[in-house]
Amino acid sequence: MSSAALYLVRGLALFAALVSAGLFATPPGRAQEVSIKILVNDDPISDYDIAQRERFLALTTKEQPSPELKKKSTDMLIDEHLQIQEGRKLGVTPDEEDVTKIVDDMASKNGLDVAGLTTALGKAGVNVKTLKDRIRAQLVWQSVVRQKFAREVQIGDVDVDQALADSGEDEAQSSVQVQQVRLELPSGADQRVLAAKLAAAEAMRARFTGCANVPDMAKGVEGATVKTLLEQQATNLAQPARLLVQNAKVGQMTPPTVSRSAVELYAVCGNRAVSSDGSVRETTQRKLMNEEMMIRAERLLRDLRQDAFVEYR
Image (cartoon, rainbow, N blue to C red; front, side, top):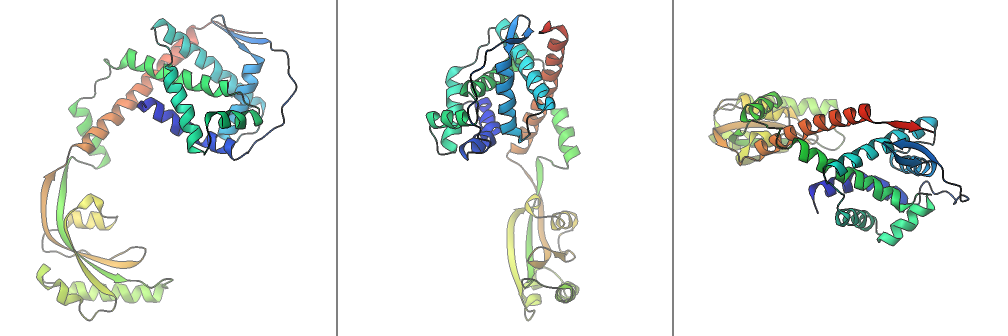
């Protein structure tokens, strides 16, 4: 399945869970005459379409039917018609195989087959076509945005470097060798016990002369254990220990920090720069690309709204 399809599955999983759980179930209403309420560049939107989308949004957002939700549903349908129309201009049509796979995956994640999901939707008053139309519009729009802007959006090394610097990450990471000293805290430890453990940790730190004496230093201290962390990346340590280790020099011991279950000290025994596998940089580049594409997509949709002929009846 494409990445776009997987994204849609994640985005609609809550909806499927709500339906399969039987929530928001409503008795079927009487058949009503369908009338056209809106024309979007001559493409019709009926009162049935609007009612269906409102029920769909009530399921996915847990909102109650209201004039505001009806307007939100109407605006969403108008946008989707504009997106589909733009797709037609570019020769983009929804991949029905992807639509089927997404619906099938949604059903299977909730212990249903497609027929079961369709039945559950029907009990909630939603035609499965409403779900499929929503998926089709999103797939088409993603293809339109990629086709229009993929070549225009260029994320250079300078952009990635700046983003990494702003986030405090770097593809060159610090690999440290440390010895971790833990003084276990009993369950439900009060402030008196915590203060005693911190005092014991400070006393141990005062006796620290180098990594070689850490095991001896911990002997006789109740609840103290020593663990050697070889080639442990500093970024994998929890804060504030990570920052303390990163700023400590080789041969120093950090001040004690408190985790959920222990008071901890870290003796820094080695530190060298290592190159990452590039995954951080690649992830950052993809994130920047997606953010820029989303900005372009919103601008395009805004322009389509401004140029569209929308007639309300």
